Amino acid sequence: MVKTEIRVIYGDTDQMHGLLLPVAEAHVSYRTPARYDDLLAVEISLAEARRASARFDYRILRDGEVVATGHTVHACVDLEGRVRRMPRELLERLSVGEPCAAGAELAKG
Image 1 (cartoon, one colour):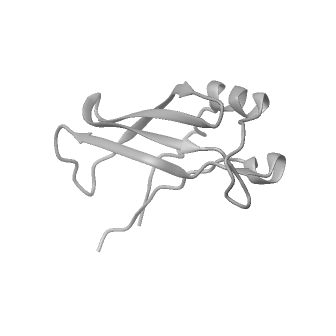
Image 2 (tube, helix red, strand yellow):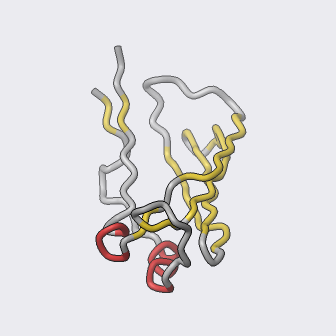
């Protein structure tokens, strides 16, 4: 059995702002199959930011070939689940993004 782990970190959103960004919508279009031992790269961009939500677009690539595209829409809610306006500082952090650390792609084991 092959185990692949992908970990998504939203940083300190809940501690800094008392907010969460749960997925409200997800879509994917598969273009070609990916196999268990394929090394994949995931490109993520902030496509749209609204008062209380953000949409991220994704491209998954293998050796420069697009394997899949998709998007997710995340609501901005407080720790009790109530919709909240996204703070300017959070929008700025999401817009800039943070580069991956060297070698921090996918863990296979």
